[in-house]
Structure formats: C-alpha cells, structure tokens
Image (cartoon, rainbow over all chains, first blue to last red; front, side, top):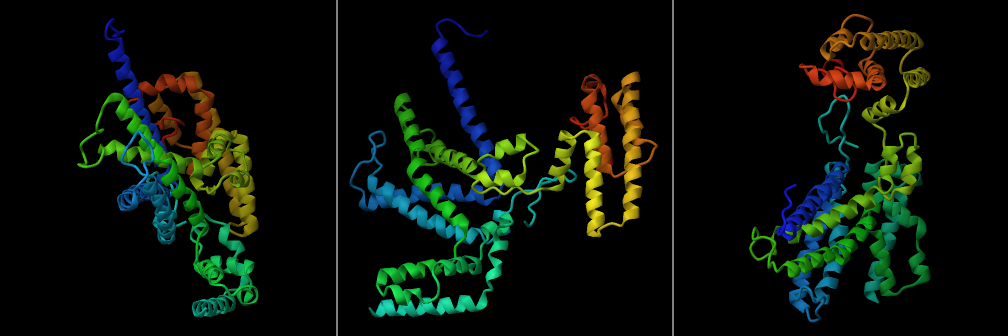
Length: 123
Length: 299
C-alpha cells in the first residue's frame, strides 16, 4: 500500500475529495442523462428553473432585500428567497406552456435494438 | 364594477364559444399517450374547466371582481405538466438553494473563497452546478418513481407500474419487447409468444393463415437446428469464429430476430464455453452478451 506514516491525513483527505468529486459528477450526471432520455424537457426545464431562481433571487435581493437569510452566506436575504420563489413559479408555468408544444422537447428518446442509433421520434 | 361587468362578458363569450365548438367525447382520448399527456391543447383543458364550472354560473353566484378574475384565469389553457412544474419550481427555489448553502459551508470549512474562477464574479462553476445536480436528481426521482422496479421485473404489467408513477408512461417498443422475451423466456415460451402473436395478426387480418403456417414451421426448424448446433459446439468446443461461421451457413432461415433469440439460449446454457473462447476469437463478429453474430443477422 502507498499509505505512509505521517501523511495519513493528507492521503485520506485526497481519498475523500476524489470520492466526493466522483459522486457529484458521475452519479448525478447519470440521473441527468436519464432525464434527457425521457424527453429533453425534463432536462431543460429544471435547469432553466434553477437559473431563473438564481437570477430572480439576485434581482429581488438587491431591490428590496433587508433581512439576512442564513449566517453561512451573508449576501442572501429572505426577500430575495421568497421573491425568487414567486417569479420561478410564474416563469416555470409560462415556459412549460411554451415548451410542451414541441415534440422535440416532450418525446422520449427511442433506442431500438435493431437500429441502435438514437432517434427523436414523434410520439 | 364596470371592470367586473366587462370580465363577466368576456367569460360568457368564451364559454359560449368553447361549448359550441368542442364535442365532449375528446377528453378520454387525451391521456393515453405521453405526448397528449403533456400536450393538452386549449380545447381539452378548457373543456375540463367547463365541466366543473358550467355555463353562466358566474352571473348567478357572484358579481365580485376577484371572483371574475379567478374565472378568467381558469379560461387560460394549461397542461397537467404545468402543475407538476409548480412542484419543480418550488423545489428549485426553496430546497435546491440549500445545496448552495452546503457548498458555502464547505467553503467556510476549508477556507476557500471560490471554487473556481471560470466565471468572474460568480463563485466558480461548482456554485452554479450543485443546484443543477440536486435539481436533476429531484427530477429523476419525481419522474420515475417506481421505474427501477419495473426494469428489474419484466413481468409486471405496465398499467400497474404507471399507476404508481407520477408522470412516466411506459410504452412498449419493438426492441424492449424482444429484449424482454430473449432475457426472460425460455425458447419454448418464445415460440408461444410467436404463435400467439401470429394468431393475433391473423385474426386482425394483417397476414393470412397460410403465411402464418409456413412461418411457424420454418421458425420451429430454425430453433431445432440451432439447439442441435449448440450441442455440437459443446462437444467439439470449437472456436468462436468457427461457430459463427457455422451458424451463418446453411439451413433454413427464419426471421433474423428469432434466430437471435434461439442463439441467446445457446449462450445462456453454456456461458463457460463462451467465456473461454471469446477472448481468443480474433474477429469480433460475436455479440458480447448473446453470442450472436449481430452485424450480419440483424437487418
């Protein structure tokens, strides 16, 4: 083994970091990929919801942010938090109405056994 | 007061319009496929609201402005997915940020200001991505609740599964049906499937009875010859390329997919032989999991 006395802390820290990174990237990307296979909308919409939430949290926060939300990150406010919630709901509702009209977004990917290439078929 | 009258007028107009245009039989066909599940057009959804709030109820029950606004909001067409998205948006704004807080705590612990400098002004790529990861995971769980049990159990009825799932609708595809039959059924049962399916096709008038008979006999011959060959392979333990060549050679040929099915039985019965000869077969004509020469036979 390459474990050496005196370097245990460093080595196990590296070990933990590697596992955390692998977990974050590989496992979560697997879930995201499965979402894409169920239809592009299940990837695109959650991603855009998170981005919208960040943007509106920023906007609402600098517009009428007063109360601090959490000690760990001092720049976040309750007003930004709740305002982002409201705007994300409105935005998500509207964007779904738009995206659900296109079969490219809502149709699951078909991987056929006889024809192994990926196809976005009409469903 | 004037505004409420205007709204009431608009509502009644819309009510009249949609009840005259839409026949009421279209609702039941709307939820059969995923596309129509997501793609509810204005006619379907407004018809549903038309059922719950019949024509002219506004003028009878209330004249107040908020009530009329509510009624007007109900006229906007929506799809069922939009209500799922309300859950998604709530998660994205109330719970997913705690992934960011977690990241902030991590940064505090290890005294890192930013996770990276790829985007100036932001906390690096990771700060943006951790929310995305949590959101993707939530979407996955929300979309396919109980989907994992369906893939492990090929005998579950699709209806039974989709009853428990929030959104996922399980449709059969040719590939998935063949795969299920190959992996889960014995050759005899696969023949039963072929027989039943062809009987069904005859009854539907897709093929005539004579064609069906010929197909069945030739398929059965293919199945028997391949079983004999698999025994031969076991006896002589010949190389993989040789076996592939033999399978490809003479003999009656049924449909390619059924041939594949019968050969997969060969691989299942003698996995050790296959395991031994596969690394030494130079030409990669064998399918890694079912020992079928997959390129040639599947057209």
